[in-house]
Length: 404
Image (cartoon, rainbow, N blue to C red; front, top):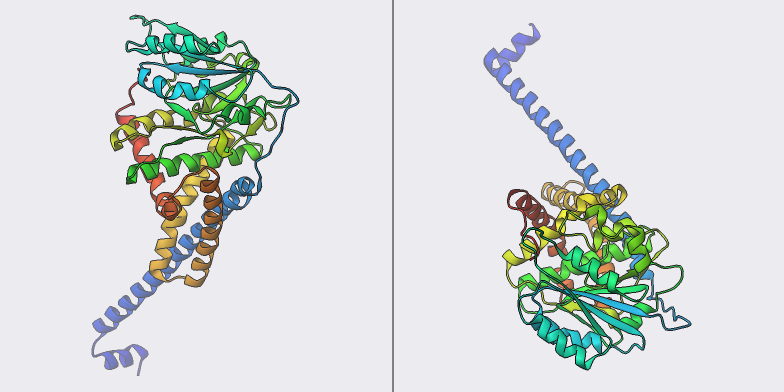
């Protein structure tokens, strides 16, 4: 008896043979396809884990291992504090005395009144009578010529009498009366830029937590990259640099048409692997009011996110691979966990990254005095890339409003 007849006898007829063979073939094909997909996802998981480890174990860990250096200078370095103010009468009334009453023997404060139509000028006149080291200048509104913060800042820098410039905003408060002194300990011959921490005040609520967490994480990035010889940004709320460095790079000329970038783009252009110092001690922080609504925060971030494309290629690559690998890491982890594929390996690698992440974030948040945020670490780590991507797309559709 032929084999086909035997099969037909067993299964009843030849059509059933073809049906079962076809089903078996499809099942094997699906199994092989699923196996290939799982191996691809596992490969993505391993690669993204490795990239994350590069950041946490080699770049971010530099911040953890580095004790805040103290470099007392042999002489008091004269400092010019430069502040731009547009309709900031209330904030100047509240915060300017904290800057004018710093424990530092040789400094001036220059406030640029940028086309204010509130009581800013009256407040400044009153403070000038009390504080002789306060100097002011102003800009007038011109109907045919719009200008942003960069012009006001340039005017203030030109008016500065001293080589070292310490920058902050009118709505910022220093964390102590030793803010200038602590930042100035880095004003040495071999440094041209000092990066400080500009945080946000703590209030109840989810939005406040995510704003403070993201601000701290961004500080972790620019501190760690600077310590790794790759400085790429700073924040205008708390930063210092030499006046000669500003003019050597023609100020903000290379990005004058952008409303943002007076801080990060200038640092990205002027910083080198050796001319930047970092200062994160709690005596040298500045704090400002955070946005109170999600809409206002989105508008603020829309402006901030416009400068990333102007960064150097290396910085864009490093920052981009960190956030992309983070998204892929969590996505592939959940997929592999759901399919129970090499579950022991997957969980061990996740645990290793989590331990490194918590060590870094605990150190960061403690040093920056950011309280009640550690428990949110994993959640914010997951959702922030998606929020930023949403805001990036939103910026393409409805660009941010100019700083007026």
